[in-house]
Figure (cartoon, one colour):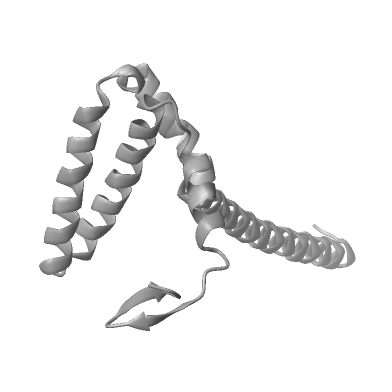
Length: 154
């Protein structure tokens, strides 16, 4: 025969253990959810960071130069690269005229790549070329005439 007091104590202890186990499992599940959210946030942040790093012209230009050097394009005939640039301008015009934003974006990117390689072939650095151009225009004054900026004195 069992002692009723011991049965009650056993039952009470068993209920407490079950409650503590449930609370622990709930806490672990919440911790898993928080951990999963942190991982998702970190992956998203890493993706955005990578996208930001690659979208910066300053960061992607060295990759373009390395790509060109690996293919020996930096020492190739610059007249061919100039022809390639005019081809890309044609594709840009086509995309613009047909209102194709993806083609416009691709053409502008291609033109930057081609101009970077063309500059290399001429012994120039595209970033220096851009800096020189900006220095020339940064303080320029003028006005819009027929949808185009006209500098003063023209």
